[in-house]
Structure formats: C-alpha cells, structure tokens
Image (cartoon, rainbow, N blue to C red; front, side, top):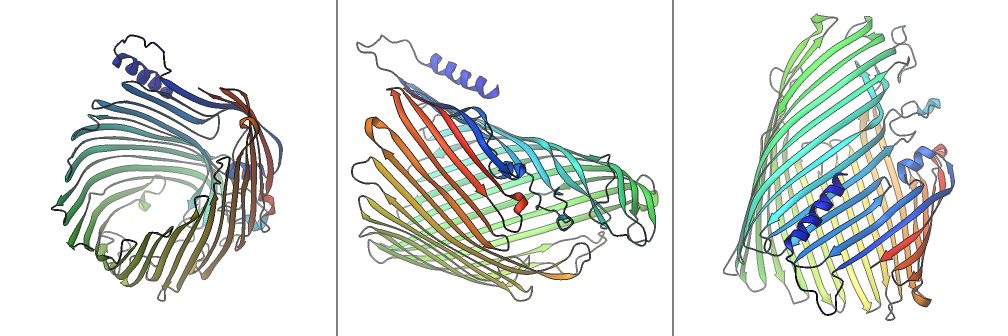
Length: 629
C-alpha cells in the first residue's frame, strides 16, 4: 500500500508540473511500458522441502514477474518493479525535472528462510534433524529521497529510509555454559535513518556536507513449554540437566547521530586532493529477562537448582571519528605519486547490571571499555611506460592499538593488543593493446603484531583480470584471485585460489548471443580451536574444491520467436561435497505487436553425499504474457 501511494503521488506531481499545451498535428505517445505476468507451478518437488525453501524458495501461483513504465515530458516519470508474489520483490519510482528536483522512492522486500538440519546442530550424530538455529524472517526496506536543483552547482538533498524485519525461528538458551536448550523464537526489529546535506560542485573542486541520525529497536521473545534435555544427554555430577519450561525476553533500543564531510580539488593539473571525515556517536540500551524451571547447575558450584529467574540491564556508547585524505602529485607528464592516510578511532564504554531474582547474593554489576585505533598510510608511484602500459609500486604501513578492559572487569586483559604490518604493493595495467585489457595487483605483507589470530599476518595476495577481443564477435575474459595467509604463532594456515574464464560470442547477424563461464576455486584452512563442551584443544581442517559452469544461449528466429536456454552447474568436493545442476529454458512467441506468449522451465537438483537427507529436486514451469508499448 505504501509503495502504491508513493507512485500515485509522484504521478500526480508530474501531471501538475506540466502546463497544458496545444495538441500536435501528429500526436506522439509520450510514454513506454513493458510488463511480464504469469502463472507458476511446481509439478515435481521431491526431497527435503526445507532445503528447497532455504536455497530456492519459489512457490506456485500468479506472479508479476517484472514491469516498467516511463513518461517523457518536461517532467520524466519512471516506475519499475519485479518479483511481486515471490520472496524477493522490488519497486522503484522516480520523478525528475531538470534544474528543479529529482524525487525517488525505492522499496525492497525479501524472505530469509534457513532451516537446514545440519546447520548448527550438535545433535546430528544422534539422528536429530531439527537444527538449533533456524530463521523464517521477512525483511522490508524502503527509502524516499529528494534532490533539489539537479545539474546545478549547489544541490541540497534529503532522504529517509526504514528497515524492518519480523519473523520466527529457533535459537538457544545457553544455561551457565553446561547446556544449550533450543527455544522457539519470535523477533522483530526496526531501523529508521534520516539524513540531509548539500553538495557544491564546480569543475575543479567539490564539497559535500551531510548530517543524519539513526534509531533502532529490537524485541526478541524465546520460549518453550515442552521438556527438553538440550544438547547434553549424559548426566552431570550424577544428575540429568533439563529445561521443563522457560522464556527469554530480549529488548534493545538505540540511537545515533552522524556528521560527514568530503571534498576534492584539482590545482593546476599537477596536484589533486581528496578528503573525507566522519563522526558518529551511537548509544544503545538493552535488557534481558529470563526465567525457567527444570534442573540447572549453579556456575562454579556443585549445587543444582530447579528454577532460574534473572534480569540484566546494560548500556553502551561508542563515539567514533574517522578520516582519510589522498594527495596525487604529477611532477612530470608520465609520473604520478599518490599518498594517503586513513585514521579510525573509537571508544566504547559500557555498563551491565545482573539481578538474580531468586538468589540476590549472585547479583553483580560490571563496567567495561574498548579503545581502538587503526591507522593506514600508503605511498605509491605510477609510471606510464607507453600509452598502452602503466606500472605501479608502493608501500603500505598499518598500525594501531587497543585497550580492552577496565580495572572493574572480572577478567582484566593481561596485555593491550597492538597492530603493526608492512606491505609491498606492485601492479600493472595494459590498455587496449591489440585488443587486450589487463589489470594485475600484487601485495606481500608481514605483521609483527595483529589484533586477531585469524587476521592477515604473513600473507601474499594477487589479483589478475584480463579481457581480450579476438574480433568484433568474440571476447574472452580471465580472472585469477590468490590468497596465502600464515600465522605460525597461532598455527593458522589459510589458502584460497580462484580462476575463471568466460567467453562471449555475438555474431554480426545480431540474432544470437552465447555466454559461457567456468570457475575453479579451492579453499584450504587449518586452525586450532577449543571444543565448546569440553574446552579441549582440537584442530579444524576445512577443504573445499569447487567447479562452477554456466552457459546461456539467446537466439532470435522466425517471426521474432526468441529462445533462451542454458543454466548452471556447481560441483564441490572436500569437507562438504555437493552437486547442484540448474538448467533452464524460456521461449517467447509473438501473438501481437504489443503482446508475446512465453513459457519457462527450470530445474534444481541439489545433493550432498554426507547429508543425503538435505537433497531435493524440483521442476518449475511458468506460463505468461509479455506486454510492450
């Protein structure tokens, strides 16, 4: 309803802005329109329905597949939308008048569904296929914005956006670190954002200033009335842990204000300056109340209790300032020197009060803080060897420090983390040398200290992208991305590589287009960790090798009949092998100069050798009409 009202309002504004004019001798149509509507059926859907919804989630029934409408006059009105009736749909309307205003309204909505039996399920080995984490969440996002004086030097703008989510799922109640009990979960959250600013732009410089604010609210209610043993079926100190009934109410609300500014300038053609600054001050307040009946172990004791009732209240603030500048100097015709500095600092101060409503002696309060700084300085030189080739080399230094806890915390940090890393940068670019475009980047870095053990430490990273046009009909694209990261102190080893090749064929006739793509990727990860239930050390080894191929053929034939056919195929091996063929075909048959009949067939066949109960296969058929004006 909100989308429809906004579209009608914009259309009304467009009609009001246009003064009446005498009809032309030969009236021309000032608008264009296109729409696809159809009806979808799933004649075959076998296997795990929850996995199908988690990966595909397309249902049956009438559908508005896509459409757009454009009205051209002194004022231009444009309206488009897609996916009405599907889990993901969009709508957009814009109204534009040169030199006066540009108003836009955008809306997106999608349904996030995740109910995979193997996801976050520590009881999978016992044959229990209900996951401990599941989501069935609707998300709706909209934004209304207006820009005044478009195309002028001084341009004010304003916008309002709203992000809302609501739905159900499954989450865990973690009881004193000894057990986890799945609960039914009902959640909803809302984020509102307001911002306004002004942009001043001339040929050699520009300046933008923006002020805004954000509000956030979230409520989450988790409960159960059925007795559950949680994730621990074995006795603890001779007793069986259980939750007979319980509920948790989690509430969060917060707000934030922010100020940002950016600018750029060009001086004499040899000096370029850019800069950005951001200041934000968020605050958040949260409460958690939980109560339950069953058999629980008091933390740090050998005492069991039959009831729990606790209340927590916390608040935190995190003022943050961040700025970056870049200087580009061109001392001679083919040489450019770039220098940039990024500084990011924030401070988090928080307080928490815990109240045990049954055992007041266990109540406590805590204060905590986090001070964080991140700095990155980079210098780079670029040389145009010829009109086709540019080479570059540089150095990047990243450093920072953090203070994690205050003296009032029960677990003070032994040392303050620090960050220190040096990187060497190199690259080259080839521009249209006999049909070849190429861009290569390489980075070699080494860190003395890092914040996290999984951070980049002793690493090499390379990216290569190339495009080669054999002739007007054939084009080849190649891409390679490689990352090798080691941390000997943390015994971490991570390596990834991805190679991709794509081919585009567009013959001179213009009636056929062929796109083919193949990607080979590999991931290897080794990292030690602690088993949550026993806190014993172990090593996680993850391996994944994936082959992904896509092919799409678009052909136009007799009397504008159009056939599109192809699909994708994904096959992986390693820690979690799988296969996922996804062929499809669509046929358009003209019925009238403004109407075509179309039919579409799609197939999904998902399978995993280690988790056969998550497999499914589905055939989908859609029949409809395409209208063009």
